[in-house]
Length: 225
Ligand SMILES: Nc1ncnc2c1ncn2[C@@H]1O[C@H](COP(=O)(O)OP(=O)(O)O)[C@@H](O)[C@H]1O
Ligand SMILES: [Mg+2]
Image (cartoon, rainbow, N blue to C red; front, side):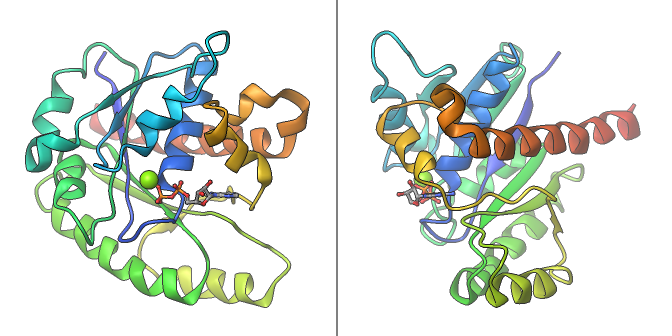
């Protein structure tokens, strides 16, 4: 069966695209699925992440760099589609690059990590437009927002939830908090699952996000066929 493709996109850098991409990949791999991360960002952060793993604890998914394919990323990704269960495309900021548009052409799901701050939410309008434009061509494209670095007890977070309820892209129930272990996962080249009990809260968040996304994409399969 063809891989399900998740493009992790946002208008700007620093929203958590690579963190979410790599941890989702780890989570799917942990479930014994075959996972490919496509590093579509010329900064190569996902590639470096995997390369930071130790010899005795390799990053659990394959990572390849395809940023040089530029507007043809979708064509290159297509070549891997029968060899994996999940392909996660870690995109550069859409403000800087045409790559996200290309990635979205082949995606089943656009996943937008978003920090609930005014600046980040203003920028999110840009990616909503990109997703909207691509869905004129890729008509089955789904989209979800996931809050990252979320601090639930702040008034800013509550305000963000209010605004986002009318944003036009559905919000995942799962929220990803700001946690040291997410930073460490990049340093040690692991997904949070690789930290065991020390990563428990983060693991629960990522598992819950994975479950949610599986459901979103299951529904697509039922509707289509
Ligand atoms: N939930 C989180 N908790 C703590 N640090 C985070 C979290 N998400 C991202 N970061 C950190 O924020 C920075 C930007 O994240 P990154 O995933 O590289 O964003 P992007 O790929 O969108 O540019 C990195 O230093 C990363 O370790
Ligand atoms: Mg990145």
